[in-house]
Image (cartoon, rainbow, N blue to C red):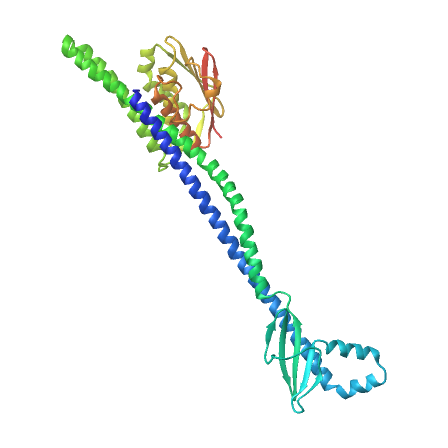
Length: 402
């Protein structure tokens, strides 16, 4: 890869990182605003309900006091007689009833009971911190004073206090959301970086055979050795076709539109081995198929089964050492494919199923695409695949069928 391409790649990654950071900040701000608005709306309903309940409680209290006063007026003579007989308890009750009450006889224009100044009070009104309620009963006009517990001013004051505290807490909300959004965007960022690296790598996979074809044809024009150039060009074209097929199959396998049936895995493996006989002969690799029982896979797509195990066995042959063997073994609920494949480091074994992964810059990228395709099929069918590898000795894939 040229220095110019490396610089472009670096600039693209920096741009992607900055763009994701910008979205991270925006989403954090939007979430914070949403939380604040939700909190303010709920708090507004709460404060308003609190104010209404307090107001209703005060009105109820004033009405109750009015009824008590009316009861005293109705039984005025009886109560006066009992009080004259030194009924101290009744006297205290009436005194309590008439506390914060003014009674005016409208016919005589005379105050019968007076515990506060009614100047400038002619209707129901609030003179903080009291509510003055005016009632009419027969010839009497009754004023009742009730202490306001929670006024509209209190409600506004409480609301603005909550707003102030919520604004201060919004910074905490922002950083909390910033953390969670960043954690959720991190896999996306990694995927973008991996995808971009994959694009550059697959570009290399395309360009290498194309350059070989062009250089081979140019050389053949100079040497007039057309037979050798044609064979070399065909090999390069097949390699390019292999890479293209791997990409197309990976896209098609994700569509999830397929039929399912019962498949005899033993028969399918035999078909795959027969298809790969030519490749095995070219590599001088011996395929040994061991089957202790016949294994049937229920409700699977036969094309997916074929693609999955064709690629595992094909990779085992293609990347095996010459004059060595590939072992295929079917047990009761598993299939094992063992070969002398190039050793895969333990820390990289979980990465080889990533379609964007390349073990080295010079490794065959299509190999990892096929393994990603295999992993996709296995996950779709709820199977399990594990990898065991010993340095410079062997590599074994184990597929367990649930």
